[in-house]
Image 1 (spheres, rainbow, N blue to C red):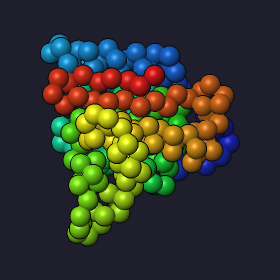
Image 2: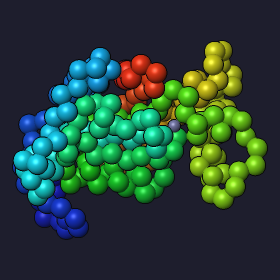
Image 3: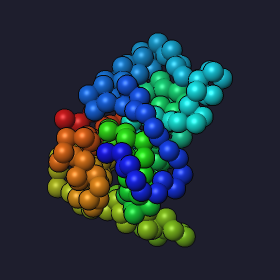
Amino acid sequence: MMKSNNKRPFLIVTNESPKVNINSALQELIEGNERYSSGKCIHPNQSAKHRIKVAETPHPFAIILSCSDSRVPPEIIFDCGIGDLFVIRVAGNILNSEITGSIEYAVEYFGTKLIVVMGHKRCGAVLAAIQGGEFKGNIKSLVDVIQPAVEKARGETGDIVENAVNKNIEITVEGLKLSSPILKQGVLQGNLNIIGAYYDIDNGYVTFFK
Ligand SMILES: [Zn+2]
């Protein structure tokens, strides 16, 4: 996936890290979350020595698109450190062209092969989309993006917030696959995996979608 002869506007990555692997990346996240949710964090890659090591050439092994909610910090819940994750956070873990561009950037320039779209329990942005009403400023444009997930969830049995959270994750995953030729090509070639995940803010456990 690495380009060899075109312009690289921000950073140049010359060597792939062994951790940047389509198979091991998901396992790294699973194991990190198991440590976090069971109270056995090891806080890896947070030393001054490691900061210096990655200062020139980061090799994030996963891209995480998660909600801005203060209870959902990816580096903490996956027990990761500096340079491990390329994180995009926006309320409701939605997509727009700038967010898709950020993800494409990490895939193109860092060679990252795993993208995780992570929603979470009791997401306030999803709840706002369900409750509706008048929204001040630009909040309406955010809520509007989540509405299709809410409409899909209304026809289902069970908790509408949790159903809409899960639909919203699925819609974002599909949106990434469909809207970006770069990401679509990566998936078709077997160089990229895009999956959804659900974070339970009560017990700290992340469930990855199959
Ligand atoms: Zn949220």
